[in-house]
Image 1 (tube, rainbow, N blue to C red):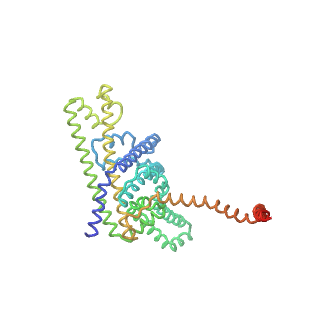
Image 2 (cartoon, one colour):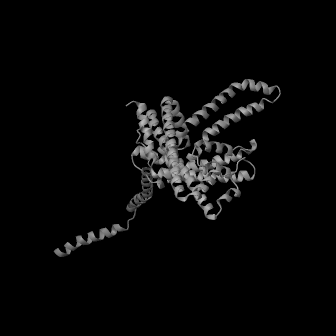
Image 3 (cartoon, rainbow, N blue to C red):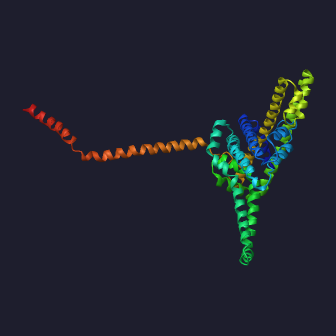
Length: 406
């Protein structure tokens, strides 16, 4: 089988691995916490007029909208971080850091589950994978930040050089002489940024498969991209195409299920259900929009229906996230075998390391006892107390036969 077809076949295994309950529940919880975090940030940011969108606009524009399209989500998220001026981009930084904290745990859990399942052919519990992700939290958290910090560092170098150019006479000469360094800095900005973006999906699987740290994840991601660019691009294209197909199928299936459910329930409930559907579809915010529903029971029914719409969207998102984590882990293991020659089933298993650590500690605990035994044995010859006791019985035994002969 050609290598490209073999890689595609391995990536397609991600579809089967996506349906694992542990991965889906991890993605589900991560998405729910992300939604809560975004809404909390928007509440405070809109209260201080730092963003031009309120939390209710995000809820009505995407979460309870009858449409499941990702385009609306992207547009709402971009509009939610449009700050009043450049000085308020702190809101965006806080938002991104909070999301990074959440997904450092849950994306690490998903990739750990996928690494063990694909490499060993066995499934571990979500408790063990979550414990692994928490143990490696700082590695997962810092890995995406390292390329960003590198880009910001070289940007700061060029900006600082530009500030030096404002000095009269000497500044212009310094900029002219040091401009090659600025070009080199610009090249590093582009190199670190582009390779970091396209190689990002290899970083989390590296930590999950190797049990390593941030620097190992970065070095492997950059090395694999540069060593096998064509192989990397083929895997990236395969993952993208399969991900788009899966997203379309999951969204279409969810829409079909919801439309069928709404239609069949509406046949029995009649005008009341049509009123609730019209309210949800035309919801724009404010208490005035609740007036057409009339009774409290109608309002309660509308609220529960909106929650069900949100849950369906979260389930669709969970499927997509679980596939992304599984497929990226498979791609990493394939590239690792191609570049380093490491077998796919060679994955860091925490149990073996724990057993080795326990044995080492037991040996260290036994060592002081052995030393004490040796010391006591060394001291025994020096003690002359028992010697007379041993000699006395011998003398008595020799004397007794003499008396018998006598």
